[in-house]
Image 1 (tube, helix red, strand yellow):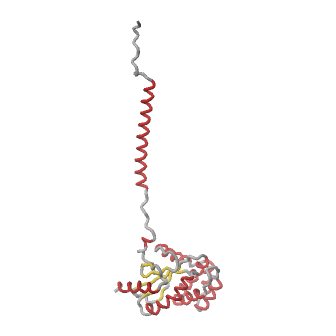
Image 2 (cartoon, helix red, strand yellow):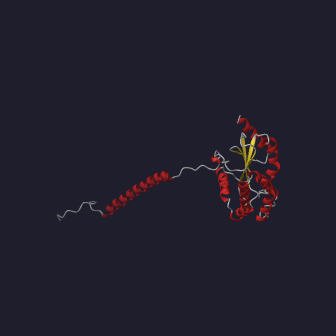
Image 3 (spheres, rainbow, N blue to C red):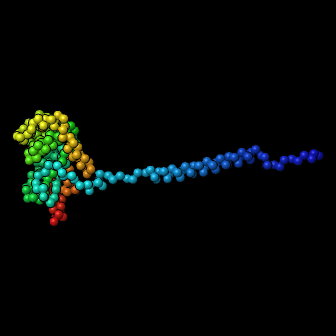
Amino acid sequence: MSDTKRPSKGTNDPKKGRIVIFSSIVVIVLIAAIAVMIFSNLSHKEAKPKKQPTHRTEQTTRIDYQGQPFIGSSNAPVKVTVFSDYRCPYCKQFEETVVPKLEKEYIKTGKISLYFINYTVLGSGSVLAANASEEVYHQNPKAFWAFHKAVFDAQKSEKEQWVTKKLLTDIAKKTVPSIDLKAFQNALDTKSRQDDVDKDEAIAESLGVPGTPAIFVGDKMLEDGLNYDLLKQSIDSALESSK
């Protein structure tokens, strides 16, 4: 019988060694995966931006009335503002059906002042008309409303490109006899009053104006400004609050 001692089973078993190595790798991989998940969650929380306020939540933004055309007393207790487009048929409806009632009941009695702000939502013709109106206002604020009304009177279908330099020039000659035609035509050719139009657009955007006409009583936008009864209720409520 040989005296050679047989090696004890398992001490250097290759199969068992492979299992140990594999198990170690699995543990390392799991630990690494957990670490990555934790780091990813922390990074996500740190990088996630705060929810930005929507237009609706920004409606407390005050309207900048400085340099805007208005009728009525500057000391009127309530300001009503219309964001309007000269090519918009509903804006024309507001001018023809609502404004006369406001003038009779609230403007001439010193209760409100009515402001007009351009909001050019219907394309290049709207932008051209807005530049023309801004030029008229800067040349002769008192003549602005006559020009303003005449442009709405000349309105045609939205499908027609009725706003032209010639039309606007003819209207300016008739409604503003003292108009500086050279400056007026320059405004049409170069859109020299576009900064004023852009300012109006920025005000509309800051208030979340969805379209035209948009009517504000103070800082509150009405759901249906063409409904005179609702407009009247809002104005009366604002007048009561101003006392």
